[in-house]
Length: 223
Ligand code: ADP
Ligand code: MG
Image (tube, rainbow, N blue to C red; front, side, top):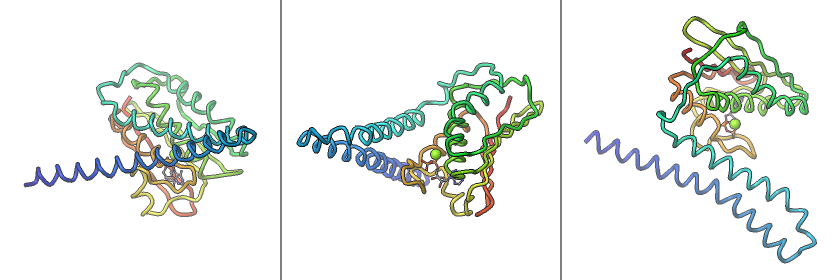
């Protein structure tokens, strides 16, 4: 009986997810098709639509990549010894241009110097990029985002803090649900993917926030 109930819950989750994916991909596809049709009928207008079409194609690509990551089994993780500061500085370098453009202060506070961690750098990068990108999106112009790294003999703790609008407890409960987004151009997949990777790396992820007080996301991983 319990098993049957679980099975039907699983099926309903799968059907909700499929409907969500189909919807999220159909929207940009409809837009692309529409702009291509207008361009075919009015060649002089084509240049105007190139950028929108590329944006929409990029959106589909992100959604598909996120879902591919979700379907990757834990066994596909390839652990290697990585210098922590390399991971952090890679993420910082990647997102610094956007932060600078928006006059956001992006800082790294740390007590580590040559700490090493056994992890898969690509997956760890993806977690941090998602979290720092969300912090940048949250603060908007002239905000502050900081990445704090702490290490102990067994763990590393990476926190991403921002002074953005924060989250209510209802929002915190929803964060990481597929397609939960409050952004006009959001996909609502970033946190879900990050949670899945953290769990595959046997770590934990925690959101702390109050409305109006900013947000801190803490990822704890075994060394
Ligand atoms: P997306 O970024 O595409 O919206 P995510 O899964 O990355 O999807 O985030 C889901 C939602 O969680 C965001 O739309 C936003 O409402 C909320 N969120 C995530 N991080 C923060 C943050 N640091 N501050 C405020 N809200 C956040
Ligand atoms: Mg995001």
